Length: 249
Image (cartoon, rainbow, N blue to C red; front, side):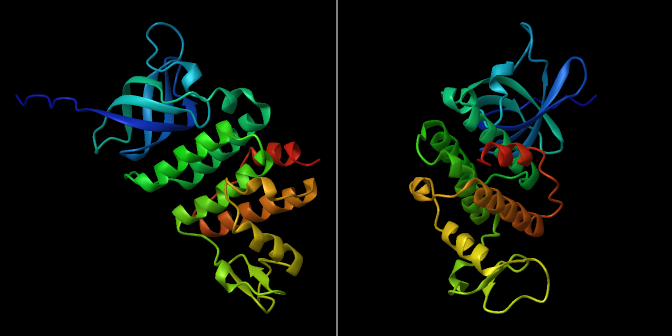
């Protein structure tokens, strides 16, 4: 008889992206981890003494310190222990920040599929979560700054160097052009000016950007359209409607 291979345990950090009930006893937690990239974990239900992970730890963008089982030939792994990786009370109690966290977690769940370590991306996400927790000014622009910066790590950042006054932004090719593209996937001149300005947005300066509700709705619609064109199998984002209604005034 062959001896059963010992279970290997690892300590890693993870960001909660999505949870799904598996049956009456278990749930699947989709996470982005520091050491393994995108991972699905099976854990016992979040109620009672036998729960490995409490429900309070599974809110969107929660950061966890974990001890996990991990085998490369598995699609679903197990969490042995988990605890909060930081204090993010405002992230989940503030109505606006909570809605933003839900929206961005859904985006990340759809765009990150790589099952390999990417420390730069993981560090960016951790910094972003901390910024969202502590930010007081410019919160209405946080998701815009996040998505423009995320495009850098996904390798799909628009080419801002191609901009010149009076240009059109070609959504399909990710560049500004002085001629109307031979397709319908482009922004008009006024929309292109706004898009070009936003290529410089970050968490430090997001408070200085001022938009009306309709303008912000158009901006996020254009960003999502751009992602859909450049990320494979990018689906409808269910929480987008919530974001648009939240900032429509």
